[in-house]
Image (cartoon, rainbow, N blue to C red; front, side, top):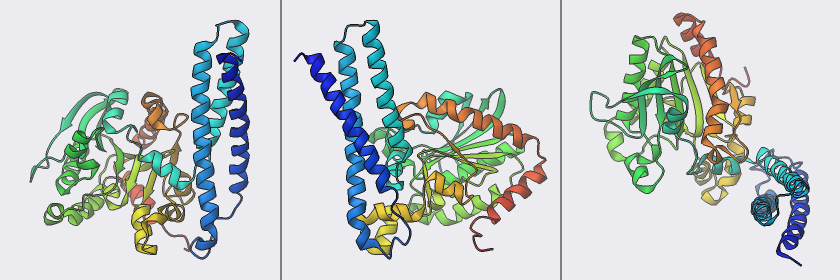
Length: 366
């Protein structure tokens, strides 16, 4: 058997196996996820089986993509061969799309934390022009964990605020892993008040585990800085559009997320606590983080159902980390539409609607 025939046969077997895994995963989704804590012990084997099935499906899809690439390299580019390879590629893409469309909360959290996910500086580069960064809080120092600055979006002057985690170890240390200190939140508020002074809309990109919990941050008033931002942002007389691009962690995220429109990328998460922290508190066992992730309802579909966000922005197949430019293109019309809608409202109406929006959150029994 030639090398090409061997790859074709391997592709056939793997496609059949991937389809079987797909059916197995769909069967597993019919199990109810309610009463998690009450049925914790009985659910553990099923949860483990689902996790293992997902891992195997991902492995099979990756192997299929490698085999398609190898078959393309070895095949003679004739019309029939090209059509066959294209058909196989579409089939693999369908399996991949189906896999990512049916991810659980824990799997989406891993995508939200992916080190190659687009950060604020990527969106600035892809969506905006004439960016001019603003540094410092005019009180203590600058905070590299938060980027603030002026730019133009479709010819309109705007103010940008966003978390920045960093790509490699050196950048992450310099950016403090995207965890802002009090001076970061005060810098963000200074920029937002500057935007209000000059009637510029504010675009915010949130991607942080939470506010920095260090002693130095607490000594400089971390809680006060967050609380002050919550109050002042609710009063700003300009449009505020918030996008959760990765992790939206607790008060550290909310401190820059009081907006007229709150959007989430498809595989981002937004929560009052990390699943690991929740599992440690609830069960004294951080290994139950996956169980906590399901119970916390941290994914975009869950939050949209509870009316805590306004819209889900789709991501490219496989996640935003695969294609930053495609992610920006999907987000761009959403931002443009929201700015157009909000620009029609008076400052007083903006403030009143923003206040009512957040006052209604959590009133499940009213």
